[in-house]
Every structure is written in structure tokens, then in C-alpha cells.
Image 1 (cartoon, helix red, strand yellow):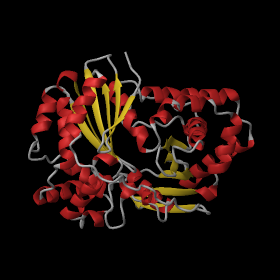
Image 2: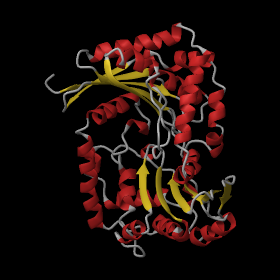
Image 3: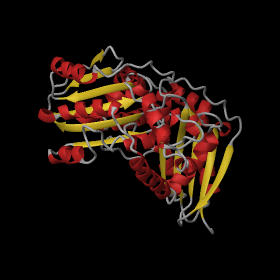
Length: 426
């Protein structure tokens, strides 16, 4: 049995979102902080992700390693992720011992130590992660496209950060970033699973209620001006395969255009998953670009990516170039298919299929207790839980005329960056 979501705000500003789900003796706890690469400045790129790493270095109450052993011993899982707009930490545990999740998260909200030796050890880890990414062609291409797509907004930097910044960020930089952003008024606690709301809320008040309050942060950042002209970037690197990324400026998740663009993405490339922790999937073999480019042996693969973000971000189409074709030929083939969307009426049947696929992927991403807890907090990072609850209804309202209008509005060359990746020496 699943009960409606309950929302409470503690006196110190912590927003608490609870959802009883009595289908299994499991509870999933997530703490979301409104801080990500969007909240970074030149010279400090990657600092939010690095702070996330430091949150696993322990406190006086929970030295590093102890919790990992305890959570694993009982079959629980825990992890964290830093993204553009947020950082989140989660534990999914057997219900009878999940209290450790609340104790852990309240403790490291205020008591992480940031020891100098641990900072330096983690510097090596983060830089190694960055260097590993640099061996991946699509990382190099996406980073170049992302930087070219924005001139001022912090979205221009990848979450991992620039290597020159990772070499110079200090222990005090990390600790100040932690203290500025990790406090109740900047956080959402989301819990779903096998509990009684009144009992759990009392535990949360006892565990988090004494944490000092801070003023809510002003998260407004001025969006970049329109691109105005198509921008092209060329990247070379390791490997034997060429890639193309076409990135269009896209609306924020709270913009009504986002839902229509979701349907257009499903029609062109197959549906994109919004849940980075989701499961399952649907085929994109009925999408227009797959049929035209992959079945036509112009590209080896095609994939779309539309992310739910607080500010306007990007809708990207990624293509692996077929060995018998060039990146320019792939781009030309994509443009022909987009032009067909603009010139030829889209049928209701095609829209219905695209909506059905997007709804199916959305259902896959919401099917278990951990994912239900994920959506409780995730939707609050860029809109509200109503956005999640009404998502399917918004898709159902999309018409062929709306899709055509969104294609004309967003999918034109003056609103995009095109990136070409070619192997070194080719």
C-alpha cells in the first residue's frame, strides 16, 4: 500500500518529504542539498563534487569505513551524486535498522572534519577520475560543447571541474563551501518506505531539529543570452571512432515547453530517462533518427538527452559516425530529418507512440521504493513534487501542432552548438 506524500518543515528550515509504501520492509532515505556545479565560480570548478567525496571521510562519531561495513553487513546500499543543480546522498536499508541513515545524515550535515591529509588523498582521487574521463571521447566532446554553449552561466563547466582548479582548491575552500551550503534551510530530506509517518517525523525532529538554522541561499543566476549563431567545435583525441554531438539550448524543467520537447525527443531519438538511478528502458528503434541514420548505416547509434534543470540547459543528440561516412554527412542527415518534422505534418499516431514510450520510461524510473524516494527530493531541486505527479498528464496534452511549434522554436541552427570528435591522426 502506498499513501500520499506528506510534507513538513522543521523550525530550522529542513524540508521533510515522506511517503509510506508498505510493499516491502525497506526504507530509502535521501538528503538533497541545493548545490552543484551551478553554484561554482571560475577557479573553484569541481568543488561541489569534491565536497561530496569528503562526506564519506567520516566524523568523530562515525570514522571512515565503519558505516560502509555496517551498511553492507545488513544488505543495505548507500551512495551519493553531484550534478548541475544539486548534491544528494542516499541509503536504502532494511526497515528495522534504517535509523542509522538519519543519524548518519544529520551528523555529516554539520560534523564532517575535512582533515588536511584526507583532502590531499581525495585530491589525487578526483584528479584521477578526471584523467580517466579524459580517455573517453564522449566526455571530451561533451565538455567542449558544454563550454561553447554558455558564455557566463556556470552550466558551462562540467561537474568534475577543470584540472587546474582541482590542483589549487584548498582545504579551507572545501570547508567553506561545505559550511555555506550544507545546512537545513538548503536541504530536502526525502524518505519512502515501510514506516508510520507520525513515528518517523518524531525521529526526524529528534535527530535533525537541533541543527542550527541558516538563512536560505539566493540561488538565482542570470541565464545566458541567446546564442544567436551556430557554434561549431572540433575535438581530437584517442580512439578509432568519430562522434557528433548536436546541442540545442533547451528550456528549464519548470517551463511548459519542457514537456513538449520531451515528446519531440521521444519522436526523434527515443525517450530520455530523467532518473539517473532508474531501471528498465524502452527501445528507440521506432524513432525517426534511428530509422533514418542507424538503419540507413549513416551512424552506428543515436541517442538524445534532455535533462530536468533549474535553469535553461541543453537538449543534445549524440551520434556515433559510421565508418563509411563522415561527421559532416551525419550532421546533414540529422538536419534533413529535423526539416521533415518542420515541413511535414506529424500524425497523431506518431505523437501517441512517442508519448507512450516516454510514459513507459517514466514508469520504469519510478517503480521501486528507492526511486519513489528519489523523486520526492529530486523534483524539488528544479520544480516541485507536483511536477512529478502531473508529468504524465502534461505529456498526454501534447498535440502535433505543439510539437511542430517547439521544433521551430528550439531546433534551428542559430540555437545550437555542434561538436565533432575525430580520432587523432585521422
